[in-house]
Image 1: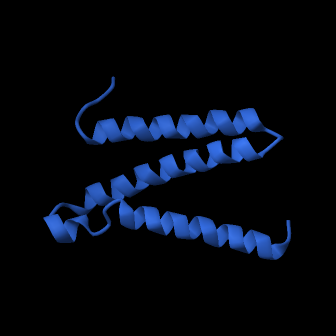
Image 2 (image 1 turned 30 degrees about the horizontal axis):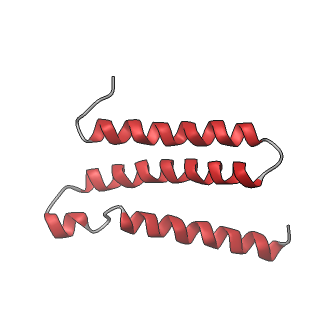
Length: 93
């Protein structure tokens, strides 16, 4: 992989992360008068889910370590889902 390809890949993931942060409600406290704590926690939850989704995607495109990518990816997605239920007041456990 060349240096330019690595830079483009990094920019792609940075853009996706910034888009996720804005989409998750970065401006929610300004619009609804909510607290910033939930926004920060929500962004963290979505980043964990995003990292899991990226690993699951990499598992479909990789020949090596496919099982590790699937396992860790789905694990991160499950952790994200668990935190979502905890935040909304409907604990699973």
